[in-house]
Amino acid sequence: MNLKDLQVQGRVALVRVDFNVPVADGKVTDTQRIEAARETIDFLRESGAKVVLMSHRGRPKGQPSEKFAMEPVRRAAEEVLGHEVKGIFSQDVVDDGVRQKVEALAPGEVALLENLRFRPEEEKNDPAFARELAGLADVFVNDAFGTAHRAHASNVGVAQYLPSALGFLMDREVTVLSELMEQPKRPFVAILGGAKISDKIPVIDHLLSKVDKILIGGAMGNTFLLAKGYETGKSLVEEGQVAQAQEFMSRAEAMGVDLLIPVDVVVTDNLDVPTVVETKDASAMGADDLAVDIGEKTVALYGDALADAKSVIWNGPLGVFEQEPFDKGTMAVAEILAGLDANRVIGGGDSAAAIKKGGYEDKMSHISSGGGASLEFLEGKVLPGIAAIGGGEEEQK
Image (cartoon, rainbow, N blue to C red; front, side, top):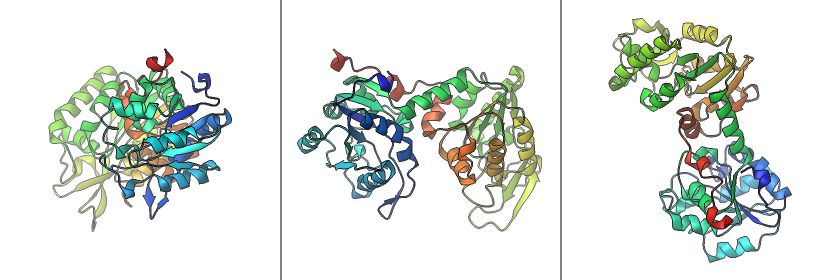
């Protein structure tokens, strides 16, 4: 159901947001996820709803913890949203006091519940806890794409008991990713990086039938190099996935998909205290080399492969981009993307961090708010947090 189709005036709207934001010294250091939810929150306020926000933060392991309390997030939300956000906090998340405070809200007011993961039932999708949450409200809105791949009480369970809709952020994520996967402008290029090929097996498997080119980087590229018979030295590889990498390369060739792997790499002797940093051809690594980035020849090769692209999806960095000087390959590809005339979708997580680091956010078509969720979307999976929306038969009857 579209959010605009929900009847919300004078009613309590329970909104699952992703306010799992970094906090240091009692202050939120990155408000991007709060800003992303603003459109949905503003719409509900202006429509006369009583807005109750709920989110998790960190991993408190089902126990109340001051370290993971939502009060710093509440203060940051007030600054971002430009109006009061009431803290309706209980270590039990929901109790009689919380219910009374929710009932006392006036139309247009916004409140925030305590960390959902203070209750172990949250991650278990416990029906009783879901009913407790649903009992606070009249309608449910899911605007937390970052948790859409998890079946929890606050995103899947609640939707069974209330009329529900996707928020604007969630709706945009689903629309953008669905159109990219089903109706891409061609050539369609996927850039895949990160540490492990095992994390990307379902993605590569699904994308082979969707894309025209796949560009491989990051430590997972080392496994492909090993699959070609190259020496990989002390580089991070998954020896158990060599056969899988060989199979992907063979399938790509048979399907007419260009699967490109690094032709040169930046190597070092020690990641923490490097005394040697040099670029070598991928076929010339020694036994003591540790590959940490793609080299300039690979950047040029990938730039040529991207030159005529009309659709691009990028998931995973191409090197140890958090650490200079091993960020050059990732940042160079980010710069290439920024200059393309194409639909450029960034799959959240580290890829989004790299785009932000380079200051290229405004150049991208879409930056996903959920790394894990976008990855599973690219695998072709049905995300439970999305599939659950539109249920709530018990309440609607």
